[in-house]
Length: 323
Image 1 (tube, rainbow, N blue to C red):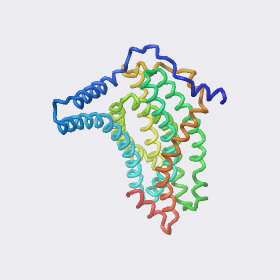
Image 2: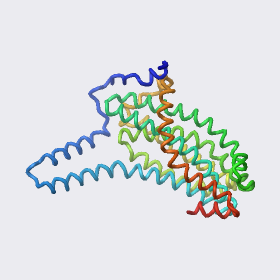
Image 3: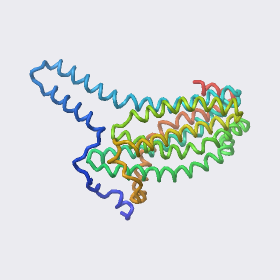
Image 4: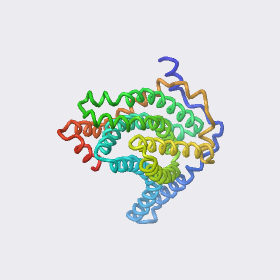
């Protein structure tokens, strides 16, 4: 095993504040204690114990899951609203946005989200072991790795037009899709930061702030899309640039929250050179995570690319974007 792998797999360092527990765990500790006391209370009928315990567990799951679901839903709504705005420009523009957003962009989305999910595993382990300082290191390490991956993906975006034509897509639609995709290049690097940050927060059961930030950003995104596309007249390029900008707004707002929030004061202690060690071991874990997720997301990408090969590709892609 080489030195980089040794750094990656070495035991977690002891926390400098072993007696401190971040505030986000207090609610769940109370719920766990309440759940345990109810299940062990033999004075209550068995069915009543199960009913009360189930209700407590459902409330806890809703508290954690609802904001996370809202975040992914709002992220989808931002992309969908961009396609809707593009559709009002014309059938060609709608087909181009569909091909660019689903045929090209989802490739990077699946890869980045999959690789970023490795943070959830490592941060969850470190958080459970009270090694809070390592969460920030894992976050930075993932961002570095995903940024390097983003640089490689940039070439796919830059040369998407010849790639689409090589796959048999209509040259006219491929040209328009390329214009749309060029505006999504900054979004790649927003993915590289956003997905690790989300997993970093979720490992600490901090989910509501991301939902609030995403909801506010959606409103800003809709207003900016209308202004840039229709009033400024930037068309497809403007629509995709606004989408990239919206993702960066989410990233910056979440990072400000991490830096300023008391809930992250133990898990984020600033930038560390330790993040540059063990990248190869981290890459292997991230690659395995990416493969599992990419297989789930790329099937729809293949469907869109196949739709572009039909006799009337513009109509076929327009139909898929509506569906």
